[in-house]
Image 1 (cartoon, rainbow, N blue to C red):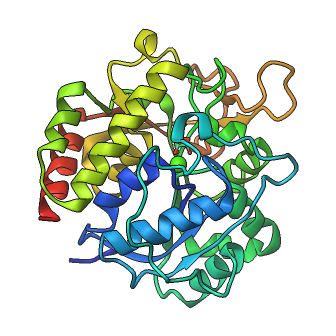
Image 2: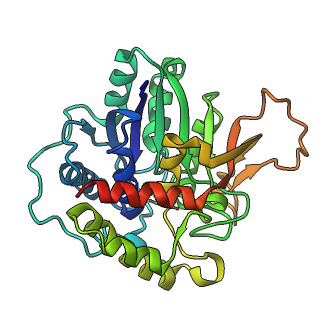
Length: 319
Ligand code: RIB
Ligand code: CA
């Protein structure tokens, strides 16, 4: 099978960690590296969590590079109120790995990896786009080597944590704008769609019955996430269950047949009084942009049953 070469950029983070169950064990992917960034938590924490996730899932062979500790031009606003002080709720690694990040930082690691790769590489971006924006600012020539960027974030309708902005864009809107308008094929898995890939309370209990360390970690993570999202995000009004945003986005890479897409012209609000981080998507074609100018492949539907089947089967495979 021809594998997809990919670099994963993340801010681990509960749903980042949940998504690793699928990506790290997928035979369809050739994961060239994982890079971390500040987002859900500070960079030391997202890096520690990712290193230990790789160890727990038996993938310490994948290099990890530590990325940016703050957004391009703003202070970090983290999501500790959702993901907890350690970024993984009340889950703590019993025997932390001694493995350290690569000697290169994320920007230089991605640059070197792209330049060495014989195939074009997909970037799966599950976090604020700071690392990727810095890469493109410093090394614009790498654009030719990137097949596409698949990004979790943005929306037409659903905001979180503000009514109109999603976390991964709000944290670093200038980075999101730069990447979205870079000319690289940009696939957006928006909150409008990830909210349809939800777990019910019964689904979470089902995970709890799978008896291996990875599934048990996923169970604890989802339980905690469900509680904090319900407490802090008024989720009962808006969501049908627990939305695992990064898992949904990762499955778009491994199983695109479970999704549909449409092309829009898009941009990001960076200076709004009320709307900073809003992703403006011209879904009614008001601006009459040409097909070439439509820079966003917007993922507009997801097969929830298909995602859950893959997720549950993968968790069982760790037995
Ligand atoms: O809004 C959800 C997204 O923000 C997810 O990627 C989550 O991990 C956080 O980064
Ligand atoms: Ca994330």
